[in-house]
Image 1 (cartoon, rainbow, N blue to C red):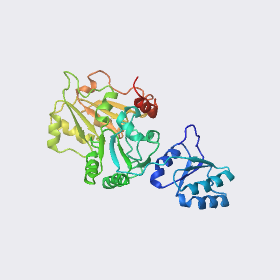
Image 2: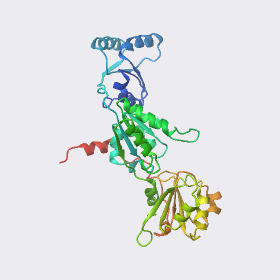
Image 3: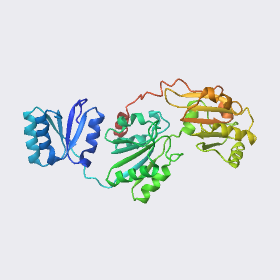
Image 4: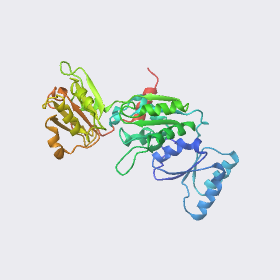
Length: 360
């Protein structure tokens, strides 16, 4: 897209093949344009039909591919009808695609890694979940087709096998594919399954680790998962399904910090099992909900007292549960006001430009 060109709410026709123009189409759309694409051999007929009907006439034509004689005829037609014509460079022919499995961090856009930002900036396709910084993908990946494969209320998740197939199919077209996942792709994120699918298909793949919520969410609430003379180990578990008795006995005897992801629904089962296997009732427990958002909330209680107050507190996912002395080791735990966390305070592309600048 040309510098300083305001395309907001303008009708733009991009001329060229789908693969050659995909990034330009995405960037125009991200800038607020009403954008459509046309094959070079069809553009004259399309323009004549639009002018005849008076409907869908573009205000701007972005010419990216086509024979010189076609372009000359379209340029003449555009001049007669005062349609702006721009010459844009198409993407080079697609070679072999590549996949980046990117950890998007716990939700705050500022906790994305530089490597993750670079992958998004170069992406042709981004497949994302609802967790992580999904709200800023269009800004971070202005040239990408954005595909939501996550689960939200009223929107069922795309099955993992279909996600694997989508990743491989886009890469097979020569595209740069970013699979953006909340937290870290290998911490309960099924990133290993996606890595294996890419390898089985012969698709090059790069893993970009992310900041996991298992550590960052407690840290944001002032809870260190380890602390000298308090806890020298921490264990991260998924609470998605109830634990067996042998597992509960092991967790109760760890004598360290227990961090539970996806455990709101099974919390009563967890604390009852920990008590059965010897954990004392006054062991501190924290429920840390929706961290790095305006709705973040910390509930500090104990293993023995949390269940009776669940009906009042009504905790909701996403939440991180922390069990251990570290919850109160530094005094009162809890989130600071969230307003600073939910605003993107810097421009990612400006930062990337600065990183690419030569050193002085």
